[in-house]
Length: 143
Image: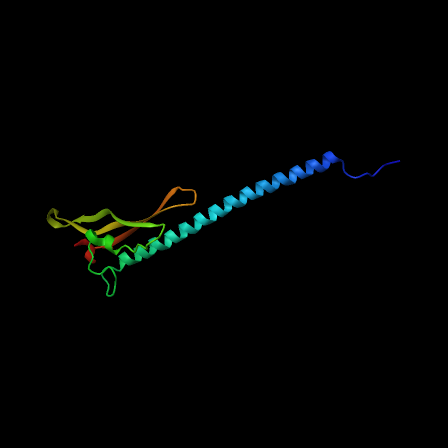
Protein backbone atom coordinates (compact mmCIF):
# COMPACT_ATOMS: atom_id res chain seq x y z
CA UNK A 1 0.00 0.00 0.00
CA UNK A 2 1.37 3.42 -0.93
CA UNK A 3 0.67 6.68 0.76
CA UNK A 4 0.26 9.90 -1.27
CA UNK A 5 0.81 12.44 1.42
CA UNK A 6 2.17 15.34 -0.80
CA UNK A 7 5.39 17.24 -0.39
CA UNK A 8 7.49 17.18 2.72
CA UNK A 9 8.33 20.34 4.65
CA UNK A 10 11.97 20.25 3.49
CA UNK A 11 10.94 20.04 -0.18
CA UNK A 12 8.63 23.03 0.20
CA UNK A 13 11.33 25.09 1.98
CA UNK A 14 13.93 24.26 -0.68
CA UNK A 15 11.55 25.29 -3.47
CA UNK A 16 10.77 28.60 -1.69
CA UNK A 17 14.51 29.34 -1.36
CA UNK A 18 15.10 28.58 -5.06
CA UNK A 19 12.24 30.87 -6.14
CA UNK A 20 13.40 33.66 -3.79
CA UNK A 21 17.00 33.51 -5.08
CA UNK A 22 15.88 33.64 -8.71
CA UNK A 23 13.64 36.64 -7.89
CA UNK A 24 16.53 38.50 -6.25
CA UNK A 25 18.73 37.87 -9.29
CA UNK A 26 15.99 39.15 -11.58
CA UNK A 27 15.60 42.34 -9.53
CA UNK A 28 19.35 43.02 -9.62
CA UNK A 29 19.35 42.49 -13.38
CA UNK A 30 16.39 44.86 -13.77
CA UNK A 31 18.20 47.59 -11.82
CA UNK A 32 21.31 47.15 -13.95
CA UNK A 33 19.26 47.33 -17.15
CA UNK A 34 17.56 50.57 -16.01
CA UNK A 35 20.93 52.24 -15.39
CA UNK A 36 22.28 51.08 -18.76
CA UNK A 37 19.12 52.31 -20.49
CA UNK A 38 19.55 55.76 -18.94
CA UNK A 39 23.24 55.82 -19.94
CA UNK A 40 22.35 54.88 -23.52
CA UNK A 41 19.76 57.66 -23.63
CA UNK A 42 22.37 60.17 -22.42
CA UNK A 43 24.80 58.98 -25.11
CA UNK A 44 22.16 59.45 -27.80
CA UNK A 45 21.38 62.95 -26.52
CA UNK A 46 25.11 63.79 -26.49
CA UNK A 47 25.40 62.54 -30.07
CA UNK A 48 22.53 64.77 -31.18
CA UNK A 49 24.11 67.78 -29.46
CA UNK A 50 27.51 67.07 -31.05
CA UNK A 51 26.03 66.58 -34.52
CA UNK A 52 24.06 69.82 -34.27
CA UNK A 53 27.24 71.65 -33.24
CA UNK A 54 29.12 70.13 -36.20
CA UNK A 55 26.34 71.28 -38.52
CA UNK A 56 26.49 74.76 -36.99
CA UNK A 57 30.25 74.97 -37.55
CA UNK A 58 29.87 73.79 -41.14
CA UNK A 59 27.40 76.63 -41.82
CA UNK A 60 29.82 79.33 -40.66
CA UNK A 61 29.97 81.22 -43.92
CA UNK A 62 26.31 80.95 -44.93
CA UNK A 63 23.66 83.63 -44.83
CA UNK A 64 21.58 83.58 -41.67
CA UNK A 65 23.96 81.41 -39.68
CA UNK A 66 24.30 82.21 -35.99
CA UNK A 67 28.06 81.65 -36.49
CA UNK A 68 28.47 84.23 -39.26
CA UNK A 69 31.61 86.33 -38.88
CA UNK A 70 33.31 84.00 -36.39
CA UNK A 71 36.98 83.00 -36.37
CA UNK A 72 38.57 80.23 -34.36
CA UNK A 73 39.52 82.66 -31.63
CA UNK A 74 35.84 83.25 -30.91
CA UNK A 75 34.30 80.03 -32.26
CA UNK A 76 33.43 78.98 -28.70
CA UNK A 77 30.98 81.92 -28.68
CA UNK A 78 29.16 79.91 -31.32
CA UNK A 79 28.87 76.81 -29.14
CA UNK A 80 25.22 76.00 -28.61
CA UNK A 81 25.44 75.45 -24.82
CA UNK A 82 22.11 75.12 -23.00
CA UNK A 83 21.69 76.24 -19.40
CA UNK A 84 21.06 73.55 -16.78
CA UNK A 85 22.30 70.91 -19.21
CA UNK A 86 24.33 67.94 -17.93
CA UNK A 87 26.41 68.21 -21.11
CA UNK A 88 29.48 70.43 -21.61
CA UNK A 89 30.29 71.29 -25.24
CA UNK A 90 33.74 72.46 -26.36
CA UNK A 91 35.34 73.05 -29.75
CA UNK A 92 39.12 72.70 -30.06
CA UNK A 93 41.55 72.78 -32.96
CA UNK A 94 42.97 69.35 -33.74
CA UNK A 95 45.34 70.07 -36.63
CA UNK A 96 45.98 72.26 -39.65
CA UNK A 97 45.83 70.82 -43.13
CA UNK A 98 48.65 72.29 -45.22
CA UNK A 99 50.41 71.76 -48.50
CA UNK A 100 53.56 73.21 -50.00
CA UNK A 101 53.05 75.55 -52.90
CA UNK A 102 55.65 76.50 -55.46
CA UNK A 103 58.87 78.02 -54.05
CA UNK A 104 58.49 76.29 -50.68
CA UNK A 105 55.56 78.37 -49.42
CA UNK A 106 53.33 76.35 -47.07
CA UNK A 107 49.65 77.18 -47.30
CA UNK A 108 46.92 76.16 -44.88
CA UNK A 109 43.90 74.95 -46.80
CA UNK A 110 41.85 73.66 -43.92
CA UNK A 111 41.66 72.80 -40.25
CA UNK A 112 40.23 69.91 -38.31
CA UNK A 113 38.33 70.79 -35.16
CA UNK A 114 37.10 68.47 -32.44
CA UNK A 115 33.61 68.94 -31.06
CA UNK A 116 33.58 67.35 -27.62
CA UNK A 117 30.47 66.70 -25.56
CA UNK A 118 31.21 65.58 -21.99
CA UNK A 119 28.84 64.41 -19.28
CA UNK A 120 28.62 62.27 -16.13
CA UNK A 121 26.57 59.10 -16.43
CA UNK A 122 24.39 57.46 -13.76
CA UNK A 123 27.39 55.51 -12.47
CA UNK A 124 29.16 58.86 -11.80
CA UNK A 125 31.70 58.09 -14.50
CA UNK A 126 32.87 60.82 -16.82
CA UNK A 127 32.00 60.16 -20.46
CA UNK A 128 32.88 62.11 -23.60
CA UNK A 129 31.93 61.97 -27.25
CA UNK A 130 34.34 63.53 -29.76
CA UNK A 131 33.36 64.24 -33.37
CA UNK A 132 35.95 65.72 -35.74
CA UNK A 133 34.85 68.34 -38.27
CA UNK A 134 36.95 69.81 -41.06
CA UNK A 135 36.70 73.39 -42.23
CA UNK A 136 38.13 74.52 -45.55
CA UNK A 137 39.94 77.75 -46.36
CA UNK A 138 36.78 79.10 -47.94
CA UNK A 139 35.19 79.71 -44.55
CA UNK A 140 36.12 82.65 -42.40
CA UNK A 141 37.33 80.46 -39.53
CA UNK A 142 40.83 80.36 -40.97
CA UNK A 143 41.34 84.11 -41.13
